[in-house]
Image (tube, rainbow, N blue to C red; front, side):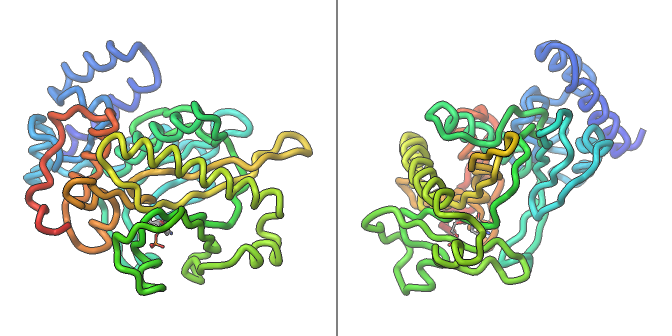
Length: 330
Ligand code: C5P
């Protein structure tokens, strides 16, 4: 059998196993069929580049086989209607009314789609990191769309009407803020700064003021109050979470949606929170552990994302490769 065919069978087998049976049993069956290390089955790391032990990973890394990325893993959801495909995620109709399936792709884009790449394993890591963070936020009372993780790349979420805003919270000057105001990257801000952008690919997500939001009716005053206070609570939670694992939370982006119940609705946190949507710097070395590695051609994206997952306790240490190759490029 050709290597690619073997991989297809592996992923198909995993796919059918994932939907039923006991977790330990699935792990054992899958391990015995494929000899792939358990961590891949766990879905914590699909990236070939970041696992030193797994024979499949090393074959992938050496280009001997190609992971049929997305093909098999989508097979379960692809039977459902695709409702929306974004740059890094796909939304499918959910199994019950009022639910959706959010599928995390490996695609990475930057500069409003001008730079594109596929980062093998990114979707798996972001799915798990985002799950971890949204669950944590639920425990501190931040209502959000997350229901449960379904598989390596899929999570079940509540269907909301997305508010067309990107809400950015900043603790440290970086990125477009530094450019816009001529602030040196890394300068601590005197207090958290909340900015709003209008979600529009055609317009390049322009920065807007609160008054634009109210004038054009993208959200009303009550919603805006909720959004602002929730964004600051999320900042408190995330700053603490990352500080505890030696990571400085520089900034991040949030999205919100309206959850309807009859005629009433509430505004809740939606989308994802992951190294794609946050700036995360190692507190000791200043190393970037986020999407800036891709935006700025620093390399080591998956090593950085895995490192975040490892520190959050999502990924076993043995599976994380050092960022040392890329260490000179902070
Ligand atoms: O590029 P900028 O400095 O405005 O980004 C601020 C924060 O918002 C960064 O953490 C970035 O990853 C995130 N962001 C995002 N999606 C966008 C724009 C920014 O996740 N479309």
